[in-house]
Image (tube, rainbow, N blue to C red; front, side, top):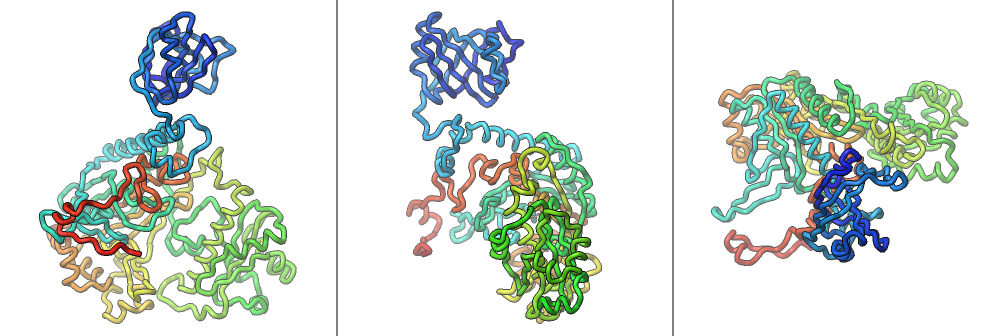
Length: 605
Ligand code: ASP
């Protein structure tokens, strides 16, 4: 192994096999850096000692695969390479064989400057030889193994579920696989193993997990791939806390495998509180929360500022930004995206000048320190009366959500100054986990004027909210219907502003499940057509159960300090869902289509 030789091996014979990472020709002496997965060893070929090997070495080029046998020798003190684990020794070649030649690759694994991503993905096998990729893929292996070991130790069984199956309602589009045997019918690739894992609870496997591929046909972003890997689990008879403990346990093991210690239990926060304090359901706790400073203003102040006095006045504090120039202050406003009429006061100096008393109160209440940037987000008159069944009304939500997005945009803009997002030093180890709980059960779809499941329709509502499910047809299309205030026994685990996973306690009674389908506007016939097998299974002694799924790719991406999921997935797809290496997807032959009974319509414009 090229990375294993140490000073203690001096004098021993060794055979190394690997790639020619670099060759330096000093006339009678040639140095070859030989590389494999474990590292690099310097090989020395001395022309004076062995002309035949020397000649072979002269023909070596980058990425040739060779085998070298020789004697391990201590390097002179002056040539010790402290940056290399094997830097105290070198291998003096006595025999050399070229196992395979290599064309000159489009880029070299040893290049310090990265080539463009398209080339990297097309020649992924070369890209994967790079140190950083070798590190990431090894890290992924270690993390997955730590999770497997932990869960197995807790009595979970890893059980596989089918890939060729039928649609699961996770809210994305399905990837479909046509059936040849039954033309005109399709399997769906699973968006998650949700129904299977619930069926496994009905089948008596009371602790299930799987590190499993899921498939969702969505528009892609840096942290999304059409196929991605979930750590999926389910257990019988849990409270939410039971699931949280298991997750905290395996995350502790996973982070330990990557060399980090994390603190458990993670803090917990209601969805409503997350919205009020951070304007988002996946708060980044490394940044300060909002402060509602409405009471710092008098009624006259608010009137003068044309601020809606019935809605919160949100102060966003971004630490350590320092003095801003006029132009810098002007560049804040374009970052603000107003939802539902929310407004921004980006120039706190003007508030200080005009309303010194209010400003002093705000400084005290929001614990503003010198150098902090303070921006206010407020409601306007046009936002109307706050009226809803929800604790956070739609008008309040508009303000909080606008402020939440601005809070993150400001933190990004001034990241250099506050250093909170740094990927080195202590900042890189600041892992702030959080459980967000008690999500609303339903989400209003303004376009369709209907209610959708906020998580998925197998999530159990709170026991106390069950009666609100008995609604008439008209309330299915009413944003103010009692459905709006039904809370779900759902939870998300969040890390530094990233949702790592979500889960819930499930519905285990067929009658409740049918009621939820009805509340989602599905007739009993439709529900039976889509989920009949599942509704039937629920009638055969289903134990109470619950679970969660976490994104493995995201976890590894965070642990690797990587910017994109593509850095931690061996063979990822581009933002257009293309695999550039194998060149997929591709058209298929007419004969194949015929066999499947499929005709291609005119391609979409
Ligand atoms: N199946 C869910 C998802 O993929 C997770 C769960 O509820 O366990 O988001």
